[in-house]
Length: 300
Image (cartoon, rainbow, N blue to C red; front, side):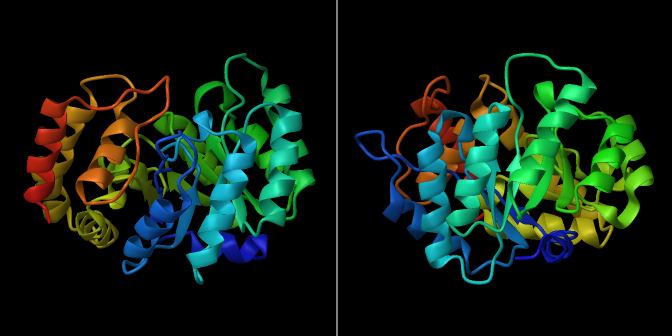
């Protein structure tokens, strides 16, 4: 898919962020993954971001990320497939090439992890990855890979396939500077954990859509919120925040990493094989799973 075409497709629609299931031997479980995607395919989304944050990209080997892309392409139909890509510059460049060869339509460039770097170094990494692939590249502004509006504008001028900016920092000032400086040149995606909690504030900063992790297990609720969000139906958004999203956040906030673990538990509670999360994450307790079961039951 041409980068500019991908940019327009993802500009306003809801983006799905599937989990990555593992089998009893802790290997990527292709069939359960595809069964879950097949179930989700009945609901309209603008694209799939696989092996991303919710998909435990940080715990996957590069070869597993490529396997996830291949498995997705087998059943994704017309939905664009965007894959998580990250780590150090050389690894990220190699991984981007492999994702492209596997049929990926774009990449979400996650942070390099651990070490800090100056803006020039962060920019050099983004530039190198853009040059390594013909796919569209979405920068994930988070952790050690934060980029300023000035640097992002320079990169957008240099890299035609840089098509998107996803923010997971909560820094509305930077988000607004970016959206004003870049305008329609990029697509903008909200990327805070359980982004529905922040969506209305981000929309005011010029970010018209987001990726939804809860879409994994309550797609109807996720789409209802997104439709209300797009229509500026604040009453419906606030009712869903009160009745579902804040109760979910109360479970999610009990332990670090539950932003992923609780989503995977939700998918399992909808009847799909997921296996456990990989360390350093931990799974929900039985008590917490029952809390999730009750919440899901009220919204399905």
